[in-house]
Image (cartoon, rainbow, N blue to C red; front, side, top):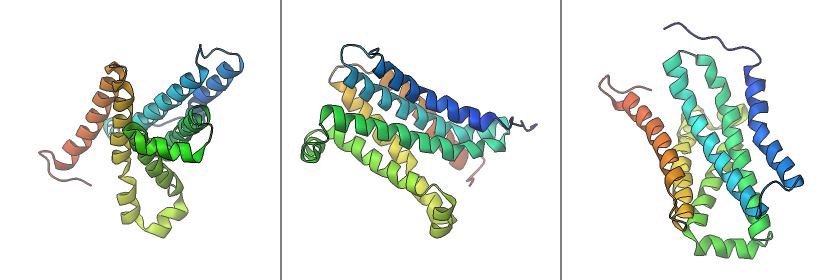
Length: 203
């Protein structure tokens, strides 16, 4: 397979592209374009962009392999940090708009509502992954332990999807949940097939 070469401006371009949703939300909030309940709109939008970034970062390896473009691996860390970025905005929006940054109320809400609990666990794992995504952490942990730690991104995907499912269960609206579930199942299924498929185990 002929390898595809990426333009040098591709990485800065992707960086700017993934900042655009944040800029739009700030602009929409400032110009009162978020509807009757802007707080809910911000919480929902930041959660949606977290899931989208998570799906995209899990797409990097399949795309790299299927298109013969090893350069795509250079995007993985940046996209992973965008997952954390939008997840942090989602958490801040919930903590500020819903809970008024009242730590005791937030803890009570985590204990009382399962979908908040699994969302918090996903964010905790994302924080660990973001904190150890740099070269110094790779050297400190060692390659094998670092890879094992960063495979917990699959647990993050499962927790994020469960969080989304439980949140939508109250409104009996599962259409978007099904779309994300299909995407994540396809990406994880591809990895399982590649590792344990007919051709035998692969790294």
